[in-house]
Length: 320
Image 1: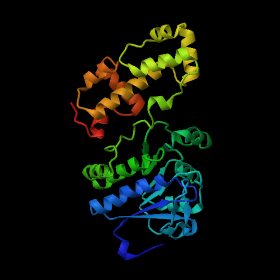
Image 2: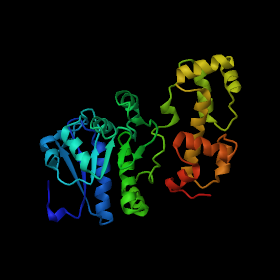
Image 3: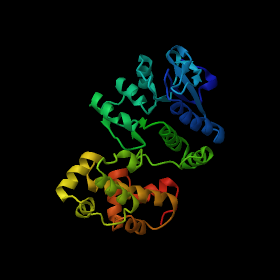
């Protein structure tokens, strides 16, 4: 255990690294906490740690020289496990997580925490490509596939790559206040603190493009103009198929039902309008095909986990 009085007043942040680590999983959060220490005069001290303190090579080929050996880390207030193809679960992580005030992961770093038992009985997320595997290998973890990051008590998990920045900004907001977090976001030229519930990807990336041209054409029509009514019967007619056949083929080829696809596209459009301007929620709801602001609110809660007004507030746009 370290008892260096010179650093006793610091909030100790330790980021676990290893061969094959994703460099942005490390540098993104690190820049946030380092920026907070500089801009706000906070007491964050950020260090990277590896097994034995050995140098590591990132998946991109970038070399990193860690600050300390995992086995020699003393006090740790916030423990962060980065992700990457080489993510593994050394015993020191289990031990450090047991005495850290806050534990977090970025991307596939969630697997390290899951192996250590930290995520058991908790909500968690990881990169969208790994969500199914995380849920399959650790049935005791409630995996949420959509959010940018998830907080379950003092355990935080984030999605892939740049979402580590969102997680770190949210931590800074909790520790030092929203204004400091907003200033950091502006300094880093990133989104002004994305809500945790914001989907990891756009609708076009969450779903597949249908193989059948007539079904794919319906997708394109919905993407281009979600404000239309787009009933199941209308979409089936555009595809030249019966309602039953269209619903079956669409779901099989796209990966979700036609109604679910339309809802996701509408939420995507409405989300962008909330981010970019100050139009009334009711007007956005009508323009995006929800009909009423209550219909839009219900869709936002289902897809993003928060109401449109809260989404706009977190996005830093003026509410109306």
